Amino acid sequence: MADRGLRSPRTRRQRELEDHYWDFFINVAPKDAHNKLADHIRSAPEDRSTPSGPMPTPLNHVRAHTRDRAKICTDLVGIVDLQHDDDGDLVLSGSDIPEEARYAIVCLVPAPYDPETSPGVGGQVPVQNGLMVSFILSAYLRESGYFATMRAAAQKDVAKLAVRAGLGSFDATGRFRTPRHGTDVWVADIVYTDFPLAESNS
Image (cartoon, rainbow, N blue to C red; front, top):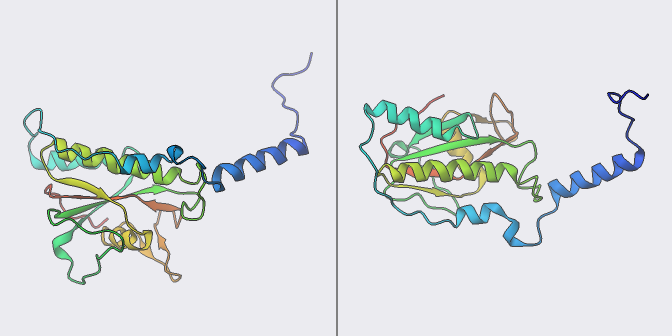
């Protein structure tokens, strides 16, 4: 009786089919716009909610809880105090910073494939993961009674906020790089809020 624990080697045809499928999954954009999850998340309404109960105290506990919410899909979270833009380098092309915003919450997600050059469903997974973090976090802050909204912008611009938040730096080629993931990261849609958060530097 054959040992079921031993698997026969893949045939050349199997390898070709797997390579073809993977290339399609990563690099071919969906033809039907309804299959682009990122568009649906960005178009979801941002209703302002009324807190269902008193805010927990002390405030530092709420700050820690906010970071925990952001870490659902990522462990790279930073905060930027927008009132300390002494260099005037936080102007984001294609997006504006809301007047009500005091802080920007920056979340990074791993991106083994660059979503800007990989339009397939698999290539867009980092965008979707980042949007889920931003969507849940902004909804939580609004539920707590504060202003919060998420805004998209060009990666080269939101990367400036990630650098200001201490999450990484630009390398010699101008690419954003983190100590943990190198350049294989995606900066999620930025969450802007007036929730009193302490600026991060690590």
